[in-house]
Image (tube, helix red, strand yellow):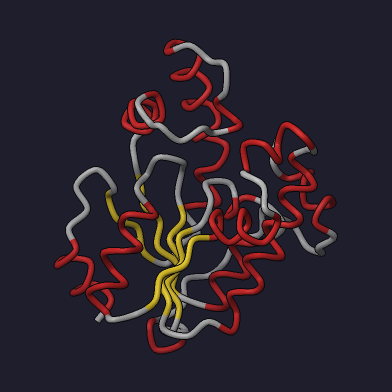
Length: 194
């Protein structure tokens, strides 16, 4: 279960606490956080949105790898997930001073250390919803190594993603906006956030 991992991040409050929907007038629109499962296309969508807005783009996974000079895949194997989640949360908090930036987050970032609640307070959150089947297909055919899906065959991967995605979904659904990842329409999205 994900809830117990909050302790590893030295935060207070329940990771399962619900964040109320905030009207756009109260949302900090200088940052947009894209959340969702691995393979949802957050990085690609972030680049497209940032280009359209004339904003910067950031990726918490890339920020982690640049700061610690190790791939996330290798970090998971050399250290452990609780340490990764703590450091990943620190990377997220460093985005607080970014202005006019679209930030793509790692697939698990929203589910640990009360990060979803923090993002809802510091920017507009967007859940890039993808079906577990589409996520499995994308991950299976991706060149990028993902530590949580290593050494799984196609059947094991599909079952793992189905279960893992279901555990993470309540966190992702706390986002202020949900868009379908498989056929993300930039024009519709831009109209939604105006």
